[in-house]
Image 1 (spheres, rainbow, N blue to C red):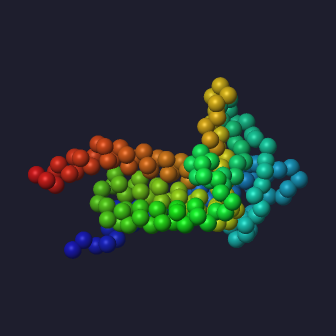
Image 2 (cartoon, rainbow, N blue to C red):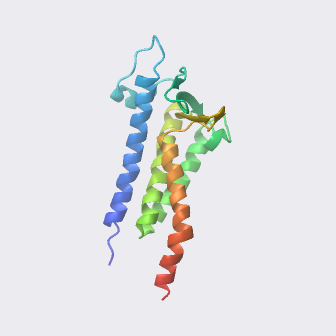
Image 3 (tube, rainbow, N blue to C red):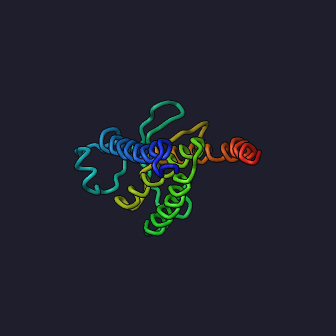
Length: 184
């Protein structure tokens, strides 16, 4: 009998937690150290975690000729779609989808599914924490080229994007090979 918590699944659960912690730490660091508005005292990490500071605004910071740090509060989903007055429908939707992905991850046996699923769930839960605490998701990475700006994003968004891309690669290239081996 196969144990429910095998090494790949434990790694997946650990990766979910790691993504959440890294995402929240980077959000605190950017908002409270890097982009803190003049005249406002930064909040320490534990005070920030235990409270829900008011969403802040900040002047953009140029990092390179193609990368800025900005403070954008996304009340919708990807690319600012589905802006709503309350975060609860998006919180519930993210939790339901994440639950389904966790079930999928716990049933998966291939690393090429477990790792991407963990990235997606960790990113989704990182953004759920923001919606719960602030009513919106804190986005701050701004990539731009010749006046065109990609929508601002954060670590959680990056984890979701990378996870979905890896799941697509798995579905197109590796899953057919696994299916072929099991049907031989």
